[in-house]
Image (tube, rainbow, N blue to C red; front, side):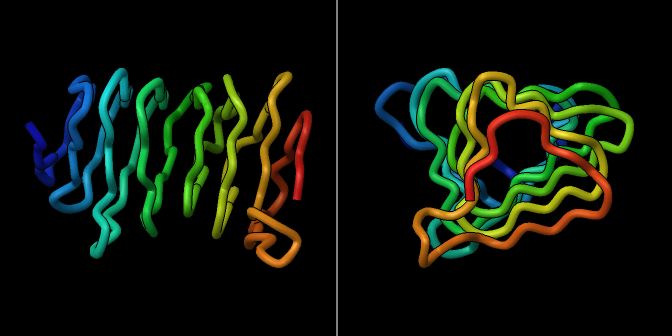
Amino acid sequence: MDQLVFATTYFNLTINNAGFTATLDNDIIVTSDLKITSGTLETHATNNYSITLGDDWSNSGTFNQNLGTVTLNGTGTQDISGGTFYNLYLNNPSGTTSLGGDVTVTNTFTMSGGDVASNSNTLEMGTSTSNQDTFIRTSEKISGAFKR
């Protein structure tokens, strides 16, 4: 059964509904971990709601980013298991975002605080030479593989 994810603040949010889609009803805040263990999480096909996340992003299901924004604004190390994001905004001045899988940003990647450690994975911006994405940063750094 498909579900709506209501606009509220969650401590942890787990999507675990194989074969079905959980669609954002509005912007949400997750103060700790967001896990997509099975099924699909969708920002919303026409409204493109955003997700603000205080800790780790784990995705072993499907994430349909549409034109939505995912913001990581934790206070320590934040892990991203990998995936594709339309807009990805990192605002973690006291921590590092660590990639546990390849990450692709298809529109705008903003770093306003904190560094990225890609480890043995790749951070890729854009989807082709004609769509290279927008990259905004001040003094943050990316350690490891970066592809544009």
